[in-house]
Length: 246
Image (cartoon, rainbow, N blue to C red; front, side, top):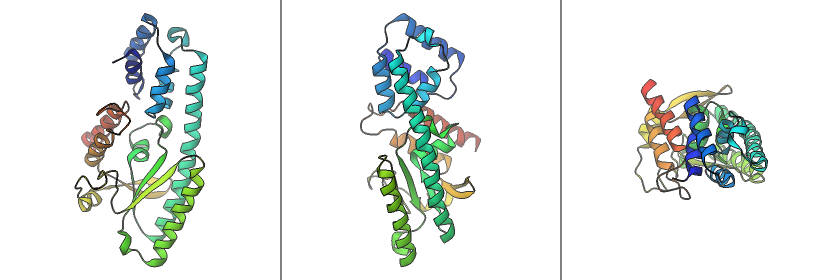
């Protein structure tokens, strides 16, 4: 691993303890760091807000990060805080409709992890809201089906300005099955799913065991190093903790 990769791995953790900080200081004071590569890597892997949070816990006199790079990190963090606020409003609109119709919805992938694993949802970047509707498309009444599609498609048009999307499927999700490459027992997943509260609305999330498997699966996303995404260890460990502690 390069020094820049080691810095990313050190800083993509929520428990950024003194030993991690000291390790980072020693790395930065020992050899020149290509901080533009650190930012580019963190941004590419959608973990720049969390990396910046931990970098900012240490005096820059010890790290010597160029001000231009610090500004990029800061802008990325601020932008993601606003993105997550938009996502909160969007989810509330979606859940209001599904609650009215008595149809369950499951939150999966990045947004589910944002609320269950991370202390703050803005620590990592997720441009999509991934949802599974607890009904098969052919089972929905004509009026309900049309109203659901109009809401979701309308919200997608609003969010397209920010290159943010709502990805939804009926009863299952194409990313979890890798476009039907994997055989997934969706009846069991729904039966064992947990119901949580999101701003006064009920929403389903996968059981911790299924979330752990899903985190390990979609951590292997094209564009990342083979079998590796910097935030995956934190994500998988968070899901594992949910398994161990219920």
